[in-house]
Length: 356
Image 1 (cartoon, rainbow, N blue to C red):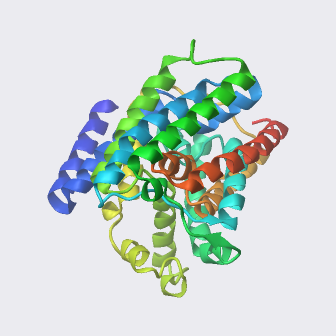
Image 2 (cartoon, one colour; image 1 turned 135 degrees about the vertical axis):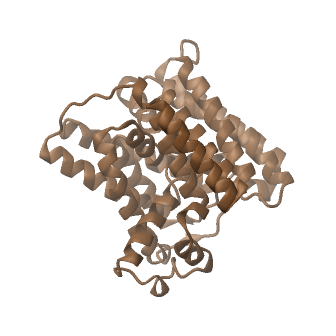
């Protein structure tokens, strides 16, 4: 299995290097590294939150805090010294509050956020494989209606690196993360000692590859935009959608990506790499093939659709809003987390009700 996959990745890398650009070829490998890190470490953002709530096990959340600290330490100096790099900024809006809450709810039902859906689909998990296209459709629908949501109320994005400078922004971020870790330790009564190593090395791998993404692409790691672009291209090709009549997709930058090959889109190429990186791990980790009922399938697919829709309203998922947002100093990332966590508390009740 691995030999054909390695040849396929190498062939795509060579073709991108020759026919597209060195940047896109490198980003393919960055995506492979991210997918490998997610799948090999079983670094689940959704699972980490569920472990904290249901078992008072903070290991997953500690892993995420370590990831945020490492990535912020790598990303903020880049943002401060290289003007061609950009933070993952999102406006402070009604759509952010609603979208983050709904996303947190739905990701627990779907058993995966944006990156989780990708790498579990790569591992061959049936529900996540079916949710992937639903996520893409939802993300497209959310983007098409985003301006209507922003009209309900929105403030300009706030970037800590721009406001404070890279050093003070990093210091403030690390202090905030330390306070969050202390709060988790106080509530669970458990510290970092005894934490499974996979959360540490998973955080290290993801931080390194996410920082490479920022350095090579000039923008932070994201997942959701690529999904929405895939569905938007399909809807346009089928004559179901006129992008010129939509505020989001008629924007020059989005319109250009809509008419270019997907291989020129930064997020799409890393998403493809994540699938390949997870597939590399798949033979080593057989999945639980417990069959789902028809009701569970319907609820799971509906959650996937809403997850895609809400992630666009919230300007990212656990990756784009939380990981990339917080690590590059966007205030919207700090608002996204508590709203998504509140949604998770409701989502876990729904998950138990339907016996997922």
